[in-house]
Image (cartoon, rainbow, N blue to C red):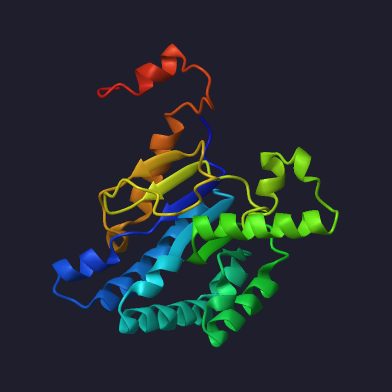
Length: 245
């Protein structure tokens, strides 16, 4: 199989990484930001067209206030200091989630950088911020109700295509590969509809320790799989997936 076109990552384990080292959770997030930079470069090196990072979920607002404030400060610093890198590598920045609910200065910085990079045709980096797949579905339903009331949508003939066109990811292909770090086996309210046929790779490595070689290992594992989309796996693929192959 060829390399995945779209890789999405659930970046997990910052807090546990810090706790095991007797550091504050925010120190774990600082190390996690360093990993973000490495994985963006790894995606560029491996010719990945789309990279989506789950950075801040809607549920994360329930974390301690000082941690949330620290996360927003880290995001602002990333936007400020990595702007040159994104521009140099022609990385197009996109977001999914209710970013209008973020602090005003953070929201404005994001929108500014998105505007500066919107014409680039290199890697498309999508950051999920204040994101919840369930909220995304609710927002899509509301939008479709509004379209129906305006007469621009025939509710009697709605297919998944119309639903997909009202999701935050309407301009993105569905992820081919979803990577989750820290060994947890769940999607955590991330791209629930879009991941219907995604291949999932679980790494036991905490996000701050995840590096280019781990990323490439996930891609290599993906390439050994056969995406069937409900059809039958052939014998050669089964052989490749045997434990000692």
